[in-house]
Length: 265
Image (cartoon, rainbow, N blue to C red; front, side, top):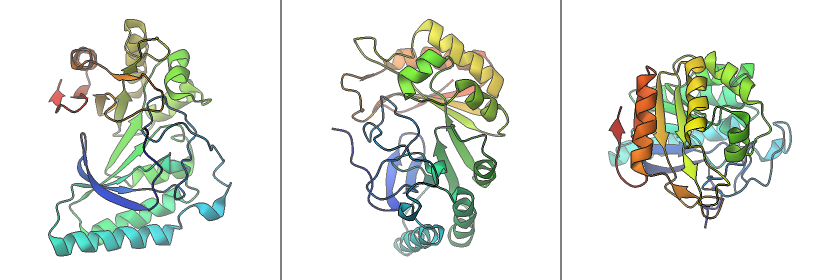
């Protein structure tokens, strides 16, 4: 079964395959998955609510409450001498949909600089809002920006992510963001309903990377129960082949297979 939505702003720290011991920050309303994508691999199941940023304004966590929650958890970590590698804004939906995302990013910077100045501040985004001016300001405040791009052609993009967003607009917006890491989830199912691992799909995705010029690329696959039943992790050898193609195109790539470690290309 997919995971239920989170009930609190701060969660973890969790041991992430990619980010080490990561203290999660959820900017979505408690217990409610809100996203403008409907990814077949989502560990929180299918998206049932896709409101605009202004909808249900009272249910979004208030910026001051987010700041207090993170500050309190960092204080506990300091008293326990607890190891945390990163503060990661992610949660059970798309965090940049929060109507005060830029304000929250600024507050998180302030908390981090006061409580743990060496700790990295990271964000995981599905990239659909990367052209919005306030989101771009907010993203610029993070040390690390992990931006999703699972496909380079509109058909595969819709198949994997279930999004009505223009892929061209997403790629154009990412190409104007400095110092980003593209995160790409590769998946397939036996029925062929969802598959971005084929030669053609990977070729189109590589072309999008050429346009974006990311700092690095994370090539990974599912490690938890996905929304779409029957979806399976991609074989590590295929992931390494894809990463090799990324490397040949001139970008640093890291591979994160399911439940097995990492390697670089």
